[in-house]
Length: 623
Image (cartoon, rainbow, N blue to C red; front, side, top):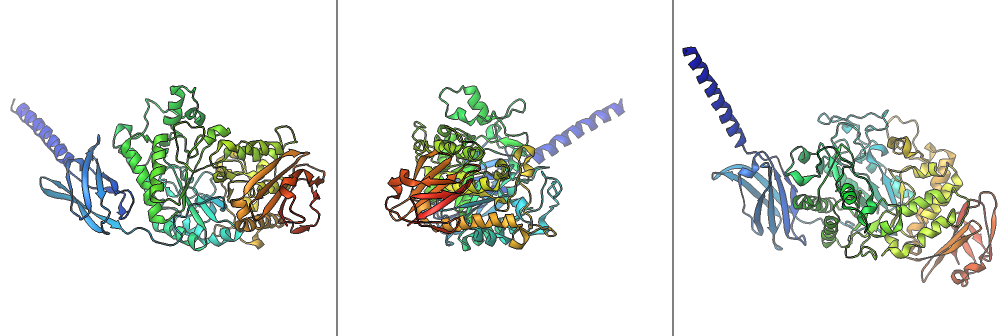
């Protein structure tokens, strides 16, 4: 009996101790992070919301004592590990450091030293980008390895493996910096690199679109300071910088996914539910709510949590994050991934807030839709979006991309061949600003253009001549200039191969003319010639566009302003050279007698009849 009493007493004591220890543990307060980590005085918007994360941090009281800074509200949410602090920074607040104190029962348990900095005053920052620019797109993991010491990081599970087309290969920000002269000398004026933020996922994260920390550069690519150095180095070379951002989703290993602030921070389903990827449903006036909701709320992938931008705290977090990166790094523009997929009202608010702070900025949204009306719906001041205004200045022109990838392979028809290009451009009346569309022949998600034209160099050169003279902002994918090829259907790793010469020990270095083949140098020089010419020709960037219905496989269009006219001829005939009688184009040519073809560097003394070789282009400055 005595033993039973002792056992019962021991059980009760053990139960008490366990519960007491859990109670004591639950009352422990720790501070793990504050985001944004610092901010700036002199912003147009005086309001700042800090996300504070730490164990049981919501059980603390918060205070700030700094002249010009007012803690207006402390927001508690579902999870006790979060606080959202609403702060107002007055117009005359001076830069400095102040303490955010977290107290419990009048005892300070945690302190964070918060810095308000002076705004970025470096030269040539926040310039925006426009049709005067030509953009070079690259994937940092696949471009060049400038720092082998960061190839593998102990705290990150995925290690470098160049043999795996879907693995990390070791390219980094320093590798990009090392080859900025190459990009600039080629004739480009802007650089867009795929996302460089931390993607600490177990595998297949080299692409950068599964972000696990929105404020931190992936350690295998470098540091935040390395990115600032990249931006500064670009600006010294008159290269603008476009940052690739993602608001629709993040990696499931993101720190706040592992400890959700609240249930509706992300879209959740009883089981994994994928998006239907039908972006047209957002503009479709007949679309069912079922289809629209699945498009917006379904996940891209099991490894990418779909963020809920209707959550006001998440919305503010993402908006402030982009403003933080703009101010911190000095970038000139943003490319926003999967633009139609997040909540469209939140995205419009984001764009508004960005342009309040940076009126010269530009943003291009990835609008992956094939039909022109569905694309035009998303441009700022759209004529067909009803009462909705996206506030998005620039779009990716997927309809024209599709036409480029088909036109040069087709025989001429009413809507095929060169007519395919004509009909896309003839619908520009649907866009408020067609000159601000991003035009491209391929990118990191698509078949490389050389493969699309069956490795036919003549077709390839025609596509490039068109891309660099048509209205809009041209983007060219890294390696296009050295004839890199690949089909997306074989795996994305094969359209994102390493740039030869970017790694120590590479047997070929295509960054140098001696490391390129004769054909590669021919194409490199072809692109460099047009890009360099284009850079100094406002008639191409701001001039008007006029085209004529293609006839006999020949498409002719003009770029013109008060001072100059440029005639572009595309002869899509496979075998026969053509002599083009130009009387049909008299409204654009009547004042001109001669011309100079900037591709062949030949003078044209008779503009009435121009000889055009088969499958070729001419870019003629009229004199």
